Image (cartoon, rainbow over the protein chains, first blue to last red):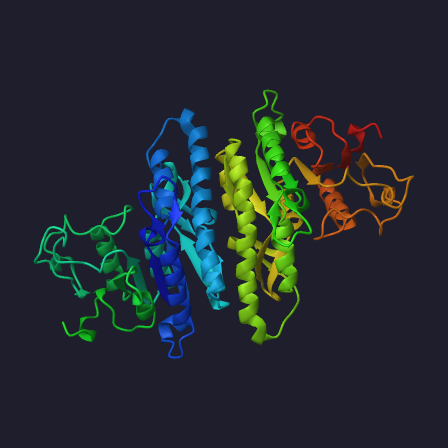
Length: 277
Length: 277
């Protein structure tokens, strides 16, 4: 089974007054997923099932900041905060609905699973997460689509659950074979490539020491820096779940990664012997 | 706690090539719910919580017929059927999203709960239905919004779950104080009012014998006839859960019903002593 995460920054346009979908990227990525699912030499990881997780991008982050979700608040603010919850939930659902439209047009039998209807958190970390139905949908041949959402938090009343946190959780519990992270960078570099001409893309990453400047390395999106992501993915690698950070803006990269073909990117693994490294 | 069901025929326009929302009705009903929730003499039933259940109307019924959901099918049709599932789920989600938009504009802290992410059926009847999170949302002051959806069925692979079935289930399990059914008729008549000039609206219904012509009485919507509804509501009445069938097309009817004010309609109850009947 493969879990494909598509960053919100890939599917939505940043820095616009109104949240907007990047339809060009969405359409291309949907067709790359379709191509992979219908490929004749379907690799066994993909034939065991696919889960798609997408970020909230410009549909989620601006209202989440506006309503200061994740910060504690006095009880008299609760009515206002609840409306924020409602607004954010409905906004990210709209993005999800547009994404599903495109995937359905490309003959992908998606089933949308909004975390707000089966996940709760404690201090922003997953507390309850009912996976039974996701497993059933996969078994029946569907492609579950999960996404960054707002959920009930037992301490803070409400919290944002990022696509990355969902990804990490379901990968571990469902023991996924592989994780593909479609981001807007080519992968993990030895130093921040924006400031350092001598930075190099790390093709196989097995531990954090390979990154020379931890603090300043490229961020993937606003819900967490690259270092946090890499740490979490290395933890999964130690459990035998490999992952690959790739650039989803580059055509064919998602298609190739889904079909286990070589791509530019960073592979995170603990299985050193499989690589000439 | 009150459960308000709003029929799909109230919120969507029938007989159009494309599914369309009845924005006028939606806007009016959202404002009536807002008024009721913010009323000074908030009756105790409503202050204990509100759940809204809406039908799928023209967003759900045409694709459900097209894909023949609920009929058994040969396994080679499964890929096509799965796409039908995906399409229907996404269509009814769009309707739900538009309804939530309107409710949020009217300051109602809604949380959308799509049945496809926590309900399964066996031969079209509810099998699994996780209510825990709905209870939590109510406790935290939200208004959960559920709706007619498509779900996994353990026998037929997939089935439509109607708003009415959801309503009946949650009313029983959550022991709701009252159910309000917003339909496009005034209530239950002694005979079909379309064919019989001498038919009378039944104001308090305690058993089926009050209906003179069971077979031909007015249908409320396409997912089930009035008789089926009435039978199910009388079963609930016997458990102490009263309900009221009202005309949601008539302005102020939902507002008055939510505030326990007298309205034209049919009350279904087993508590005869409370009525001059």
